[in-house]
Amino acid sequence: MRQPETLATGRSDAGYPLVELSHVDKHYDKLHVLKDINLTVNKGEVLVVVGPSGSGKSTMCRTINRLETIDSGVIRVDGKPLPQEGKELANLRAEVGMVFQSFNLFANKTILENVTLAPIKVRHMDKKEAEDLAMDLLDRVGVASQAGKMPSQLSGGQQQRVAIARALAMRPKVMLFDEPTSALDPEMVNEVLDVMVELAHEGMTMICVTHEMGFARKAADRIVFMADGRILESGTPDEFFDHPKTDRAKDFLSKILTH
Ligand SMILES: Nc1ncnc2c1ncn2[C@@H]1O[C@H](COP(=O)(O)OP(=O)(O)OP(=O)(O)O)[C@@H](O)[C@H]1O
Ligand SMILES: [Mg+2]
Image (cartoon, rainbow, N blue to C red; front, side, top):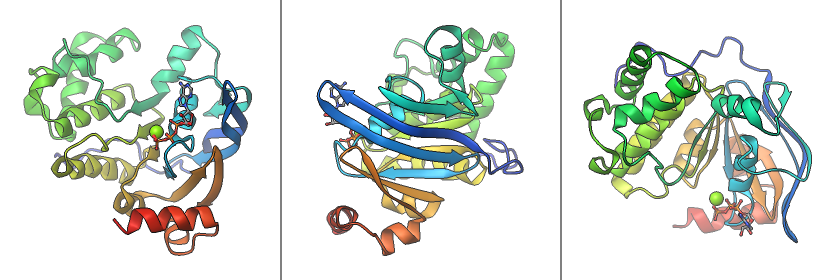
């Protein structure tokens, strides 16, 4: 990986609220999946979201780029409430990069095309400029030599790094990661986490759902613990791992840390 340039902008203007969820509620029919969620993520902050399966972590992430609607409350990105639809929504999505568990690259496009597609279509970048940007990003995540290949020719770890480069190509203000390493073979987990740690160090605002507690300790500014659709704890990694306050968190930690 190339070092001198950075993947994200620096922390000089860190500190103001970039993502704000205020009294957010959501149901799937009768199932109350998000219960009065209040959360502010400041620019440059790395937030790690943990919690048991079904606690609403993915749903919360998906509401932030409006892949899911909410029933009540307000979500703001960079001070603006989420638009409902249309061009404004497309623009918002461009500002919020998302990387999922499954590396959902376009199977019938090359790695390079996967990364240039959205900058050309949504940002109206010319092809050459988009390709230069894509090669730069692929280089930084360590897969530039794979640019001409198809996704199926890459390992899972490589594909996930391409997915990160693809999201970064839109110059997002915030990056959401929903268990980006949980579908990977164990030996590929670190190569993806290393890219995420580098992004974090360079000041990218990040919201990461992950079970990788080593990453959480190392990279997170703050840990949020969710259970049953609520945020039960929010604190520094030391506070959360060493001094969990609630029985739910203690129980969760005792289960994950003993394996
Ligand atoms: N599209 C949907 N329709 C109905 N129920 C859903 C839908 N998506 C999620 N749910 C339910 O909402 C709850 C929260 O799910 P969510 O995927 O947000 O949990 P999670 O914390 O991400 O869990 P995991 O750790 O297993 O990924 C669960 O009970 C789930 O079954
Ligand atoms: Mg999930």
